[in-house]
Image (cartoon, rainbow, N blue to C red; front, side, top):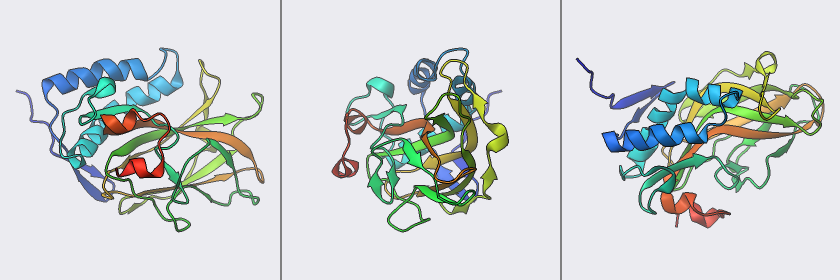
Length: 238
């Protein structure tokens, strides 16, 4: 006897409402998810596969906030819900759209610096009316291939939840396919319409270290927004 799909997601101290996913929408997600997550020997693919159920819940939570519009996947109509890789212009630092994945750490080792934040330091940013994100890890690329990641710690707030800072030095794994480092983190769901803010700070083991840090996961939003090749601030709401 099959159980009914859950209607809510308990994410740390928050309870997120979940939209329905019909059989057609589930089929679209299943087929396209496998095409988007990477090659079979990729650690990134393994991480995304391991978090598959959490990602589906995140997609459903964002769909709920987007007035439960139909999920159309990577070829969604402008008014349908789409999903795809997180791109520059989908996240903010100091309340400005990210323009580069290259990040300069604090001059003092093991001191947090804002990575994803709003207008006030160490405070979260809110999403507009068009999209949210589901983040399950970080892809870290040292500027020199011989280097190991400088990233040492991560501090996360999502919604009303303040998580305990985590040390990630022991859990970096080199990806077989791309020779980048994959670091799993607690699942983050950032909701549209200011329903759930996110904040992330990072620290490094060396002073003023420079490396590329890119969130692993999906942007989920209206198809018209995800089709924009170079989003600007106004695209988040109009």
